[in-house]
Length: 142
Image 1 (cartoon, rainbow, N blue to C red):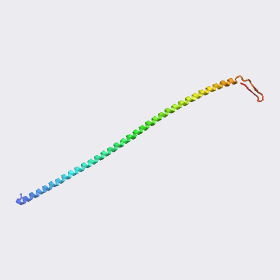
Image 2 (cartoon, rainbow, N blue to C red; image 1 turned 60 degrees about the vertical axis):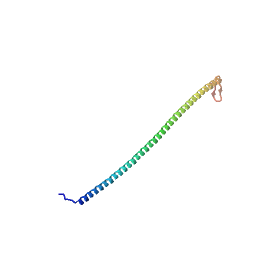
Image 3 (cartoon, rainbow, N blue to C red; image 1 turned 180 degrees about the vertical axis):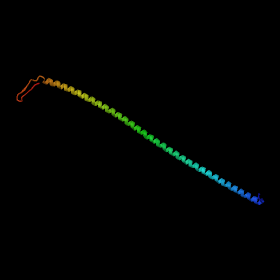
């Protein structure tokens, strides 16, 4: 059976319960504020993490650009070297062609000189009388 209370006891217990409820509401408010603070801190951490991801991505992009620039310069150098080698090969080929033609001309001139010298020799010495070299035991002539 419930015990009967006086009006003072009832008022007193009502006030105690009300203060407890106000205390719980205050604690709830503090907890809500702490939750909001934690949410804000978490958002700040997320923002910082996102900034770092963006920074890392930017650095990777810059590195990729540098790698591409280096590769492009290597391709340009290789192309220039190839063009230079082609030009040098063409110059060497032309030089060898000129040297070959010069050698052929010199050989033709030597052949002409030889034929002329041979004709001159034949002309000079074809009618040479036989000379006896009795002292040496040799015979001369053709």
